[in-house]
Image (cartoon, rainbow, N blue to C red):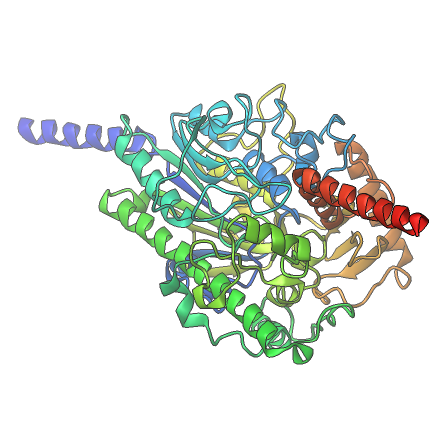
Length: 582
C-alpha cells in the first residue's frame, strides 16, 4: 500500500512537472519571393511546378487577399518590423527617389533606429536568428543584418543582381556586393542565388553552438527578380507553355481565379493598356524571345522551390520540422520593367557580359525579362503590376503553415504585410506590440483569424493606408480608393468595391460620393500621421530609374562622348575653313 502511494505521488508529480513546463517556442522560417504575383505558385493556380511550397499550402493556410507595397524595400521594411514603411525610414526605394528627398524624415532608404526587427525581438527570448538572400535595407555598420538582430547573415546588399556572378543588372547599379556577417565577400565559382541561400542557411544550423535554442530563418530569394535566370534543366519543361502569348495567359489565370474562389464568378477583368504591344502583331523572333523568358521565369520559380525542398528535408532529418512555422510570401507584384526596348540598355548589357540568346536561355550571362505585357498577364485577374497600387501590384501570395496552423484552409479576408510581425510574435507568446521608445507596430495579428475564420482581421471601420512613389491606396471594409501614378496611371483617385470588383473595373467615386469622401479623408489622416511626402509633378518611379541609369551611362562614357563631340567640331571647322579657302 505504501509502495502504491509512493508511485501515485511520483506519477502526479511527473504529470505536474510536464504540465507546468512551458512548451518549446516554435522555430520560424520566413521565405520571401521577389516580384511574384498572387497566382504564380502551383497551389495558387500558376504554371510553375512548386511541389514543396504547394505542400506547405496544403498543410497550412492560403491567404488570397494579402497585400504588400508595390516595390521591394518598403515591403521588406514592413515585413520584418510590422511598422508602416514611412516610419521605418524606407518610404521609397533609393533608386527611385529624386535628389533632395533623401534627407526628409522617413525617406532615407535604409532602416532607421526608430524600429526593431522581428529578429531583435525574437533574440529577447533566446532565438538563434539567420538571414540569407536579398537585403536591400542598408549596407553600413548600422543597417546590415548584424546590427538589426541577426546572428548570422549572407546577403545581397543591392536591389537586385545577377544570379550567377557578382555584378549588377542596371546601368545605375553596375556592381553588386554580398556580405557575410557584415563583411564584404566574394562569391564562390558555382554560385547560383537560390542554391547558395539555402546552403548558407543550412550551414548556419550546422555551425550553431546552441542547437537546442529555437531559430528564426529569413530566406529572401532573388527569384524571380530581373535578370531572370535559371539552370537549363529547370527551364526546358516550360519552353512551349507560353507560346500563345500574354492575352491567352491572362484569360487562363482569370478563369482559374474564379474556379479557385479567389474572385467571384461575376468579376470582370480590365482590358490591356492601349499602349501595350499586341501579341499577334509581333514578329516571330519577338514572340520566341518573350515566350522563352516566361519559360525561364517559371523555371526560376521551380528552381527556388527545389532548393526550398532541400531545406525542408534537412529540417526533417534533424527533427526540427514538426516544431516549425513556415511563412511564404512575395514583396510585390510582377515586374513590368521593359529591359528589351531600350537600345541603351541593350548596349549596356552587352558591355557587361550579358546576352539574350534564347538558345542559352537562363544560363550564366543570360538577361531575361518578361516586359509589361506579360507582367500584367501574371498579375491577372487584377489590374496593374509592380510600381503601382492597383491590386496586381500589391496583392501577393501568403502561406502560413506548420505547428498549430490549421490544414488545408483558404481565406479571402483582407490583410497587410505589417500583420506578419505581430502574428509571429503572438505565435511565440510575445506581446505583439513594439518596445517602448520605438515606433508603433501598425499591423494586426492574424492569429485570431487563423484560429477562427469567421473572425475578420480588420473590422469594417478599420482602415489601412499605403503609399510609395506617388501611388497610393486606402482599404476599409470592402472598399478601396487608389491613385496610380504615371505613366500607366492617371494620378487621380478612384473608388472600387473589391468584394464585387477585384479587377477594379468600375469606378464608384461619382456613384458613391459619401464613401469616396470618407476614404479620402481617412487616407489624408493616414498620410499626415506617417509623414507621406508627395513627389513633384511629372515624377514617375520608372522614369526616375531610367533617368539615373541614363546619367550613369553618360558619365561612364563621358570621355568617348567628348571625343566624338570634339571630332564633329573639328570636322565642321575644317569644312568651313576649306569652304572659305575655296
